[in-house]
Structure formats: structure tokens, C-alpha cells
Image (cartoon, rainbow, N blue to C red; front, top):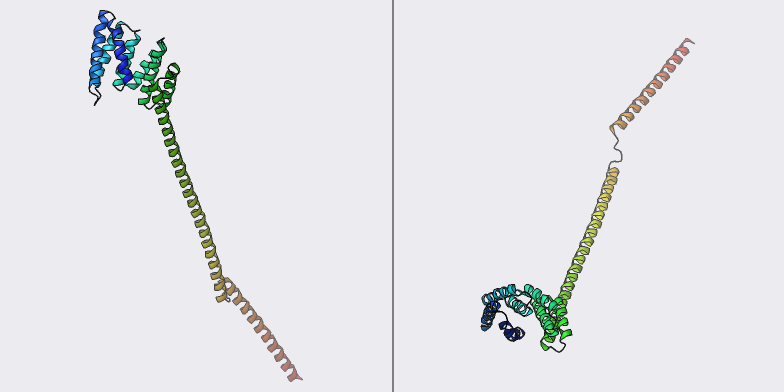
Length: 255
């Protein structure tokens, strides 16, 4: 934040030296910007928004003025339009020839990425700033802070991954238990089925023992017919014997 205030104070003389048409917009933008900085307990987006409008009007008259672009990007950042601010600072960093100003642009761009929690981008941008101004303490501090946040995010992600792996292992164990229970139930069903089959066999064998002489209707009729045939043959034999005896008696009488 101090960096932004210093930029505006340093650049004011340059703004006032420009043409008469541009001065009005620049003075108006600076006034609104300073108004927005007065109350440090809250974010005065209204004042910074009016400053943004004034700086854009000035840039319409002089589009290539890097100093005004700096203040516009700063006004966007103050309104929490971090993504737009990062683009403006990147545009400045690509075009300004002076290493110190380029480093400031990278520094502010890094801050814009940091507030969006784009840690990889902020770290890379702070490193670009330090290559131009290696001894800048604010850039070093912000780089260290971004790297610390990065490590914390990675640790949180690892912990989440571990928890997910644990949950997966628990689910696998549950599935294994279910499979075991299914197998056990199948075995029990097979055992019960075998037991029932054995019981049926034993029952059938017992019934056969209890009714050894029970025969079917067809067999009974066949057996009865055979007995009747035997009886007829026996009667015929008896008749023949009686007839022979009668003939013998008659012969004996004639003699």
C-alpha cells in the first residue's frame, strides 16, 4: 500500500506539467484517489471508482502515458478489481524501459495475483521484480509470504488426498466384508441344501423300511392272476387224478 502512495506523490509533478486539457482529468483523478485513502477503516470504492473514470479520460487524450496507466491500475486495485489491475500492470511492465519502474509494475502485478490467491502467478511475478531490484525488501517479504501460502495449500491438499485414500480403503474393506458375508451366506445355503437333501434321502429310506411289502396295483393284479392260474391248474390235476381212479375202479369191477 505504501508503494502505491509513493507512486502517486512522485508522479504528481509530471502530471501537472502536461497539457492544459489533460491536467483537469489528472487533478480530478488524484483528488478522488486521495479522498479514498483518507478513511483507512473501510474501502471507499466510490472515490476510487471516480478516480478510475478521470484517469481513463486523461488516457483518451494521451494513451501512451505510462505514469497515468500506473495510476489507473492502482485505482482498479483499490476497488478490488484485481484481475483488471493485473492486466494493466502487465501492460506497463512490458512497455516501460526503466528497470525500476518495470520492477514496480511487476511488484504491483504480483500483489494483484496474490489477493486473487493465484499463488503460482504471484510468486513468478515477484521473482521477475527481484531480478530487476534484488534488494527491494517489500518484494522479498511478499515473495516469502506467497511461498508460505503455497506450502500451506500443498499441505492441505496432501491431507485431503490422504483422507480420500483412507475413505477409499474403508470402502474397500467394507466391500471385502460384504463379499465375505456373501460367500459365507452361499456356503451356509449350500450346507442347508445338502442337509435338506440328506434328510429327504433318509426319510425315503425310512419309508421304504416301514413299508417293505407294499406293491403297486399293477403288480398286485399280476400276482393275483398268477395265483388264480395256479389254482386252475391244481384243480385240473385233481380232476384228472379222480378220473383215473374212477376208471380203475370200473375195470376192477368188470374183472
